[in-house]
Image 1 (tube, rainbow, N blue to C red):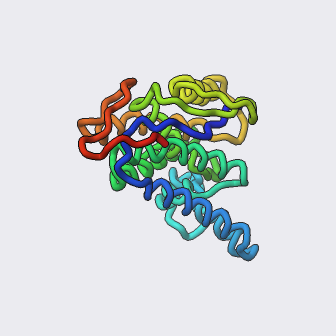
Image 2 (cartoon, rainbow, N blue to C red; image 1 turned 120 degrees about the horizontal axis):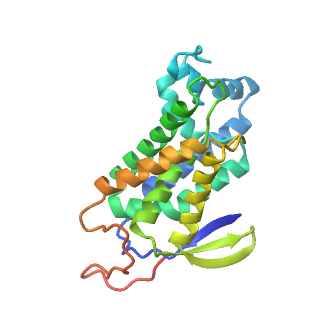
Length: 238
């Protein structure tokens, strides 16, 4: 297992990652609320907010009064356990701020949601009759990963190998391996409870969207460390 914990941001940071922090906070607050809520409230959330493919395709009745189309948005803010939550939020924290800095706050918010929607839609296409609820930010986060790999393939990322051995590698090794793992699990038909097709959908959306949503000065597959903006002075990379 490879766990990213830090990246050497090669961008000349001009903004704070308000949207990234807000998304992480929303996920954590909703998860914590589900833990402390009354049993009835928790059951209502579990029925109303996840994405159920069969409800969106009309094969089965919706499990609640919440419009099925709305669950394409709500599902990406739910998590099934601490490890599920921490894993997704850690990836978002390490890589999301860079994408937000590159394309701006509003564009990043739209980018994140669109990647999550794409992940949900591809999952539905892969299993249109499934009544198993889908939850998690993995599809949206997969889009962030794909975008990061495309704009900063040579950024150095510190990872924990097998949970404890620190290594500092180029992002194309870390994220390329992660992406290949997702594709491999789809190819071999992994039957675990992980929605691999949602990851693929999010990655595809992220790779496509970053091409059109990036400002002109943000180059694709750039391995050259950009110079600080004029007048801003030298600053340490985060």
